[in-house]
Image (tube, rainbow, N blue to C red):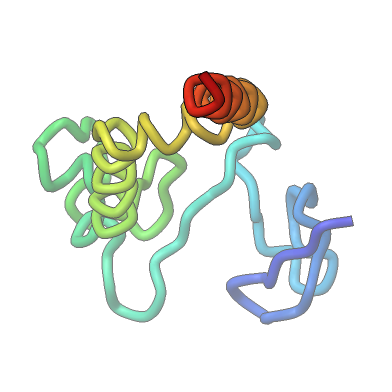
Length: 123
């Protein structure tokens, strides 16, 4: 059973819980228990660090003063994911993945080359 910390009372609760059993804080979006409800801490607003606010694609009515949001996407985490995707699609990473997937083929080719070298050196 995976657990998360309640943002209000800081007790450990089941990650699938819709509301905290200790303080009754709503943890998931109303009517959509699979969607997490993001909450701002302190006097901050979620919009200040949200990707959708930064690129002006947010249509949430509480924007730019949203304290709770289901669509929130952290701007910094989004940038990190984009960098990881760029690295994953680079030539070096592609070669790395191919080598890992085809180790047995490379071993067989290596053995074939060694056999050919031995055959050529004995003639």
